[in-house]
Image (cartoon, rainbow, N blue to C red; front, side):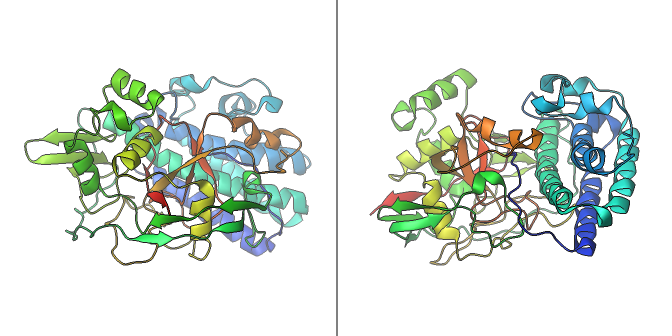
Length: 426
């Protein structure tokens, strides 16, 4: 998931921050509980990381930027871990190459769990005495770990999909039959001069969400719900992947080079389409939002449907009065999967289920300034070649996103729970 630096502005009460710390850290442990050491070690592709690395890296963040820098006399659990579990912080020195993270057969998963317990004990003990700037880093670290919770799940899904046995990580019942939603309703959006970006009302925001600024919205409308699997099947059956006219040039080259014929994890069989998920291979639910599609696919579908992708500002403006804790998001270590789309004539499923691609490049808001020091590397240096996604997914921990939240990926990437909502000009 997207990485970002904090723009938090309120220090939580120490008891609340300790409680939140324990809650977030416990969820990571629960998500990893079904994993064997082999499950947690293997890396399926350079874009993904082993579960063991996610668990260790989140702890390295707390150990490095809080305990090392703000707790006198703290000794690292293992000096080698600074090299093994740094991600991309140039200011922190040399690090193990990302594509080679799956080669770390040692330390074992049990040692990583011991590392986490060591960091937890030291941080909870130190937290009441930490200065406000260190407490802000703890809060940043918790949101950082929530990002890695989602990545742990989606990276494991990709890994298990490559196993011919197609094992399920979670035992989950089949989704109950749901009526296929009716046709899209179009909800007219705000127009004229509007404000977007972090409004300062939440206790935390990443720096890429700021500053709040004015932008102009032209007359437009958003679809009331995301596009469903059933609608995507109609796109496939109409030759959507076989006709160049709806595709961006780079997208069409990608489709041809990679032999793309359907969303990631889909297979066509005698009984129709199936998909692989964290619950194993199951029939595609035609009523659920389509997921695991690239920006290229989302844009081609929008063209085929006679519409377009929303801009980041259109999406954010539409979501301003919708509770960001609503929708199907990650609450515990149960199997995440998109739920059936809803009917109605108002904007629905803006949060949860699937990240929604926008047509907006991931670039800085006017007036953006990266923070000083190593944590300033969190965001600004990634603002090239990627596109913004909004709203969170079924694997995003509840309470982690808000209207201004900016996730970002390259246009070909689709191993996350990524889908789309249509927009049109009026």
